[in-house]
Amino acid sequence: MKSSASAPAKAILFGEHAVVYSKPAIAAAIDRRVTVTVSESSSTHVTIPSLGIYHSSERPAGGILDYIGRCLELYHDSSPLEVTVEMEIPAGSGLGSSAALTVALIGALDRYHGRDHGPGETAARAHRVEVDVQGAASPLDTAISTYGGLVYLDSQRRVRQFEADLGDLVIAHLDYSGETARMVAGVAERFRRFPDIMGGIMDTVEVITNTAYRELLRNNTEPMGELMNLNQGLLDSMGVSTRELSMMVYEARNAGAAGSKITGAGGGGSIIAHCPGCVDDVVTALNRNWKAMRAEFSVKGLI
Image 1 (cartoon, one colour):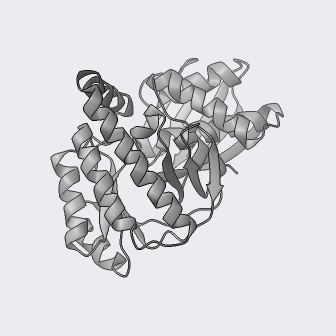
Image 2: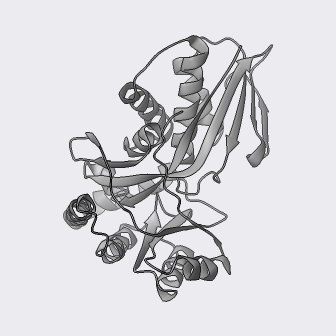
């Protein structure tokens, strides 16, 4: 018996880190996917060719394998499986690789076992895995990988799918990442030390996110760049930016981007830039030192 499923990567447009503190966020699915195939086997093996992982263990563990191991513990019957993962995005890039992997694996396991779950339940189960592995996680990443398209996550943790013209976006990523759990913990520590300041920062991120949401509902992308720049300044104050991420952010702006910011946990990973009429210029400029691509939007979630 064999079954497969795939889920898209994501880019957070507004609200990362603040979303952990019950603030809203906006994310878009991008057309880079993680595909998981599970099949009967005499012993449990995990193969992720793009990462050079060829792992044999009844309980896969370590790095991205922790997500696989927890999924198997929660949603499989403990019989041995061959798990093969094909990734079109680099792990730890800030583009939701762990969420896409988790959602795709749960989808493949459901098909393997003949289970029929709706997207809401799938997203919730995937979120549980991320919380178990990371210690703290918002439901945004797993929601966008499950539903696809554009998602607004409100302060009550309700997922709202919506349609909008995002305009021209570019994503660039580093060859290294910041571990999500470590970055979340770092923000939490800063919050503990400066609760009033950090609380005000999170409140301001909420205003930025809700302003962007209102404008996107009107298909008005004109303020997106400036709102990204404002959000980036606050991410910097949270302590999740780095010298190289800042260099990427300003390289994009110098090449004509209306705005640019970290997307994801920070500490490494990726930036996203709003580039009306200058996508090629921004991609060319960023590719001199990093890896950049036009962000192609995906309406498809888990398939």
